Length: 135
Picture (tube, rainbow, N blue to C red):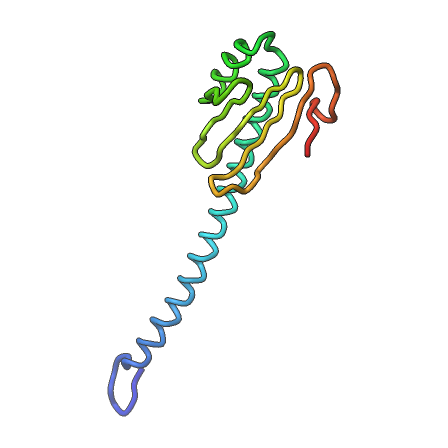
């Protein structure tokens, strides 16, 4: 700009331009951050769903508790916390599988304690889609 015979940009114009760039950049970073959080949550939910399906299938095909644990350990890093209770401390959540006779209960919660998914399955009973009764 030319003002009073001077060329160039004034300090005030530079400051205003920097503030506008800062505001636009802050908004863009906020949107990207929010999108990443949603994507992370969706990914975790999908992984938990797959872990639940795997546990249900292991339970369906296992003939003994030992066989169930062996199959379960092939699909995740499960440990037997106590008789009939299996836990897996996954990256973003804690998964527990409880077996009581012919019934298996699956529960996954975030490390903060928020329930992500839970269902129960009884061998030999059609409990809805895929054989699982969702709570």
